[in-house]
Image 1 (cartoon, rainbow, N blue to C red):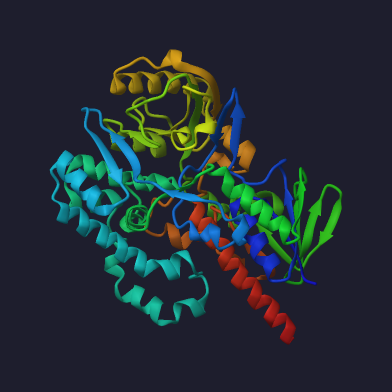
Image 2 (image 1 turned 90 degrees about the horizontal axis):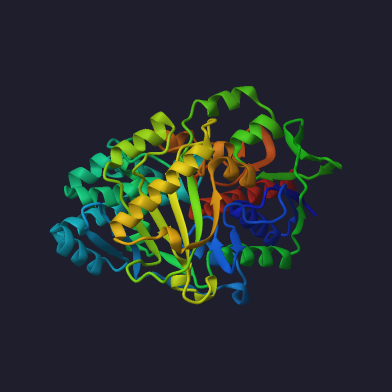
Length: 490
């Protein structure tokens, strides 16, 4: 039986384990930490439960298709995806239903419904032209570029909006400053700057508004739990607290991995670790590392998990409090490598739909701001200053005192993200997408010169975020299937 070793158990690693096990491959997963899930984790303290990382699910079928029927969990389609708060007091609910969304935007911002519909249609076109080639397939392989779908993408390249920044595109198509800021925010979904990233990223607004935003009824951590259960059911063997020290190769083939306890042989090795760390420690390669180091790192996050002794009536599950100086905020993040003093604040309250996540008459506030990658900043000072700025901002915009309602608190900073998840510099998505070539520069899911070595996760093709990590596992499954078929015919 063919043996595969998967390094890391983030969502990409878990999905790869399930897919390969279903193919009859004997799969073992080696995880450096004591639990699976990577960034899709949870925190429990003081009677509160928090989803520690991702808080929204798009393309949920990519998760559900991995699970047996009895392991599929109930998901809720959000009526209001996000509630937006602007510095001038404007409040806007971004409904998942497009007619309700356009009506809300027309009422609050006086933007014609047709203009919003036209924008979402263009975002839909971008998805239709890019999904098969850039999301669900590997354009690093010649055969995937030699078909009618790829030809259609090339012939319609101008419709990909790759020659404008997301902000330029949004300004041109939407006009209204508040609405532009709302759609600019989607750049942060893969840790990028809307003033630099190509407008192709408008595809994210299509996923949320045209296809729907969802959440597991028991919280995001249910994704990790269900995938773990499925993998174990299929016979996948997990080794926690056992970091891989090195990937071994010989004669152009992967041969296994080196652990503290010795060598473990395998014909297939799948890495679900940050690609920077892979080439600095697991398979040292100075040339590849030098190339990666030229790429700008994605942003990180500074998160406060607040157990709140209150039940807010003005907040929804997902809430955004915008900065008054959005462009300056991104300048701080990517050029100055600092946290802006008027940050955009995101609040996720899972107890709004799952009452067991907080004690009675309480709520669990996941409070996050964008942060730069860790390059040695004074994070103790940044945390203290940012906590003050966040509270001051929220209290001003909500018109009430909050500080004394915080009864429990934990904090997650970029250095801790790096320590807990292995994401180099605490960057949540590997490299940023702050150039029109960023998608092409992402590491492929395979090595042409090393048979049996594959890559999944947010730092490689097709990119960061749950759907793309799951897609990377699907691509690797197809690549492994081709390898096994080829070996049988030798």
